[in-house]
Length: 569
Image 1: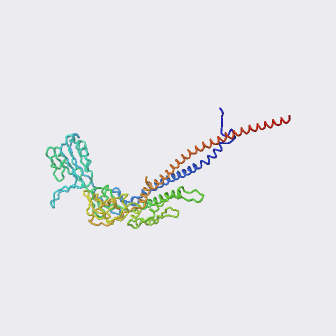
Image 2: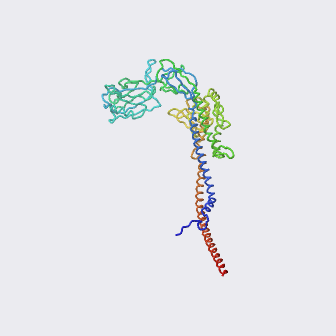
Image 3: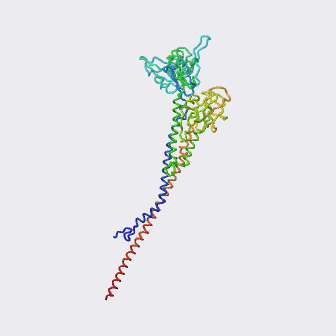
């Protein structure tokens, strides 16, 4: 067997020649790889951009609600009497608060059972909630029980399966209603204690019994649990009252206030009081002040968040100059659109119905290098003079010209604008309000009116706290800077958004280039095989020609040698 290698026979360097030819042939593949690398670099750049936008969105989203700007401190003179919070809308000042009575729940007891397994009786219990008014001697007025219309009666069937003390307790608790039952052992006997879950006189209890023994008011059988506060002891008023239902009684700046609970959010506008104990007839000061440091921190956070994003955007789109390394997304239309959309939001005027309607009015302004700067002195002045407007400038909010109409909420479909409001029926817990917003019939949900589907006011929820029927002024709904930016970036980052469309397009281009590279590689394999075949033949031909040349040379030399010999003869 002979061993051959291209070029051995002729001396022709076939491998080198084919390698050089293939270097030329591979140039289209090199170009494809360069394009692919450029696209992959763009994909990476867009990943950086998405991350920066997501970080920015997290920051502005936290600033898109009034809580970050409507910052107030509520400081009681004695925090053992009550604590307080302010929602940012409370009038700044001092209040004198006297707490003379705390609200409490009513507690009733059935006493004297030796064992928790003792039978109470069978029948039906009906527990009602309402206000008990004692009898008055002069002028003679009988006692009464007025039902609480906000609560429905609780009906409980007691039969042989649950007629023990334990069974009755469990049956009451199983209703999940505004009443709870417990068994208390006093060391001698077991007592069933029935407690209204809610404080206040309006949540007093009345228990009616339909006893299986046909006597519904005596102290035998299930009627032992009967409790009608207007009846007499042992005749329908058979439980022992351990604790009467009471209202919270307090005085605020000389005005007597009566509330059913100890957490009071509707006595001082924008302030919630949490009563802890009485103040022994002494007034306790409550100071409401603006928390300027929190507002300053929120605005500073907004500025810093934008500047961080701006650093990334400038890095990705930077023009360093001819011959220098420019930003990966320099000249990229999508990157420019991102920058323009964000700046459009930040430079527009906010229509809020207030005095402040632009960032520059609170000391936030763009610099020549594209960053934001904060003028702290200007911000402090704005906080002092127009505190409530600052929250509106950043967050989603609404202002009504009627003090009895309050903003309750909105949806992503609610558009900024000023809407006229009319009320044709006031709502209650049992009936819905009716009226219009923006001239279109609104949906009533108890005391709220909600903007109609398809209208610019869609989803705008307004609470109507009483007042006259008819036209009730206007409500100006505002989507502030932080809220708008949050919405814009959500759209950009969505699966069908601007950035997804661009990166999908780039990824499709990479896929096409991969297919193109595969086609070129297949073609190069064929071309290389053809070159090698061609130069192998050339090598063989040259080797054959070399052999022939050697033979002829030898023959000619032989002939010449023979001719010389013959001549000598």
